[in-house]
Image (cartoon, rainbow, N blue to C red):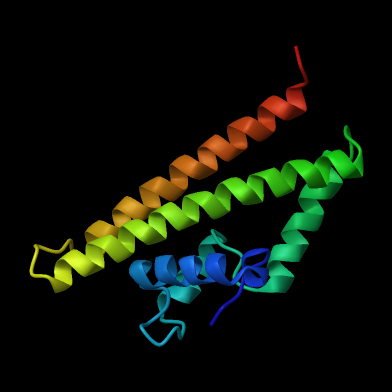
Length: 141
């Protein structure tokens, strides 16, 4: 299983991430990477290893430290992690609900439809996160 931190440290969050990656077709049902992993890596849309995650986190802290204390920067990033954790949980739970409904004979969305919907949700979350980051860098005025 691929691990991303801090999700890698939280078993429930890691399980939610696996559910999402499986629904997107990035992982197969045995949690092994599919051919889509190369696409995800090439597009640079996810941190799939602890090292990649840490490298990106270090860059963010360095950028934030230009205007803010390290403590403030790390606290804000932790708050963002919590928001992402909660969002991942809601998305994973929705995926699990749809999977149960499909097992019970309800019409199931195609993988393409689920991928499109999940991608739109992620893009919205990323846009929101960037907007909040820009607002915090702009200061209180």
